[in-house]
Length: 304
Ligand SMILES: Cc1cc2nc3c(=O)[nH]c(=O)nc-3n(C[C@H](O)[C@H](O)[C@H](O)COP(=O)(O)OP(=O)(O)OC[C@H]3O[C@@H](n4cnc5c(N)ncnc54)[C@H](O)[C@@H]3O)c2cc1C
Image (cartoon, rainbow, N blue to C red; front, top):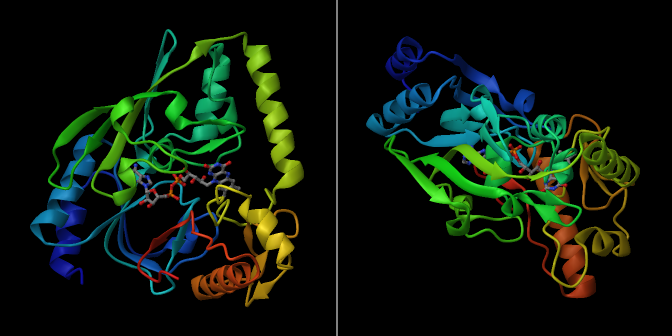
């Protein structure tokens, strides 16, 4: 789909890294996924705009990648331009307010907050997201989520125009926001925290990290929770009760530690994972009449 002329145009006009036919398995926590035709990592908002406008002018699809910790990339890869937000990494602390670009690592940001005696990001210490990805999915844990702290967000549309939205306009819900439909690229988030002695903040973070390492396969290649928890019962419990802990399709396996996690146990492909997802959905539905919806996002097609 991307002509040599387009590849040359991107290379000539873009300041950040440009990779062609780059395996996305190198850019996702599941370590799964075929190549991105073109993968760019903008280093500034202007750089991002350059990429977006070239794609728009050439009618090429754009896919946004944060830290790749909640996506399943198809084995055939992703056509068009994939934009990795990791290069937008500036942040600033002013009083109780933190402003962070989309590519800032969320656990890193929670440590920055702790270092400035600010509370509110402890829940995020073990969520391996980028700030942008965390806003898009309203990432959360331990009873808190991004919606509790996000005051405003700066975004770009696919014609390169900037917009600002207040936190109250973002339609936050359980693992969702209005950005889930992919109409905007999240560039920066302003977050309001509360003062608290750093030692106290650190204790909370360590407690949460301890809970996580006891209950989740943090040492394995996963994408976090695969399914959204139904209102009545955690998805992991349903999967466990369906007898699927340890179930395997190819190299993909339901974690023994937490049944809502699928582990890349042995060179899994995206189709192994999709087969396992389907099997879980079918078995849970036939035993409990509950349809499990996926939390992970599919890039490059292949929706189960
Ligand atoms: C070990 C582990 C533990 C986890 N624990 C938790 C947890 O406790 N709570 C939780 O909520 N999640 C958890 N997750 C899942 C994941 O970290 C979150 O869903 C996170 O918000 C995804 O962020 P990301 O930057 O990795 O986004 P990606 O996975 O790269 O992308 C996710 C989606 O957001 C879009 N996107 C990403 N960045 C942007 C942007 N800047 N603008 C527009 N769209 C964008 C992508 O196109 C894609 O559709 C866990 C994952 C792992 C691997």
